[in-house]
Amino acid sequence: MAMQTWLLFVVTVFFVSATPGPNMLLAMSHGIRYGLGGALPTLAGLLVALALIMAGSVAGLGAVLATSELLFSIVKYAGAAYLVWLGYQAWRAPVAEQAETNDAVAAGESSRGQRFRTGFLVAMSNPKAFVFFTALFPQFMRADVPQLPQLVVLSATFFVIEVSWQLVYAFGGARLKHWLTSPRRLRLMNRFAGGSFMATGVALGTVSRA
Image (cartoon, rainbow, N blue to C red; front, side, top):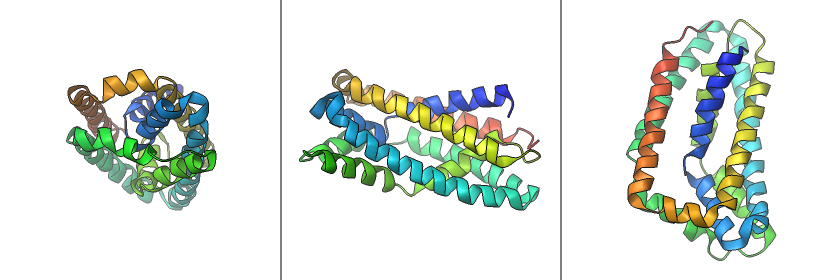
């Protein structure tokens, strides 16, 4: 994998992970409620689920990419279209429900086991995550070189960035809550993230497969 391609992936994932979706809002909510140490079981649950989702997606994706270059191209362009659609959804996301959902989920979670289960179930409850990884990874891969090393690099990079952002949200919970629960600011974040998704999908859809 070329360094330029990897750096583009890092930038893309940096903004994707920064978006205050269910996982990040849960990390923030539990950081506020329990502190960073108390939120660690929640983060562990989120990350275990993420690892399982990524493993399932990578296993299926690897099988597809090993089949033929035609299927690789189909997955690539379908993935680019999905990223554009995901960006459109983020752009139009209603801020009221987004700001309140995980605070409601956080209420009543006291034991470490409960917090771990909450994190795990919140992360696993979104089936679109499986589609997301299958759509994202081919945009940064080449069909004419071994795919497993590329998948390993992309997966490890995504995981490290995701862990970092979850810690940021948990650690800075109180301040982030006051900033992100402003409807105007959350709307700006949604539109910035949505625009980034759509631009990435359009740009990567025009890049040569090789």
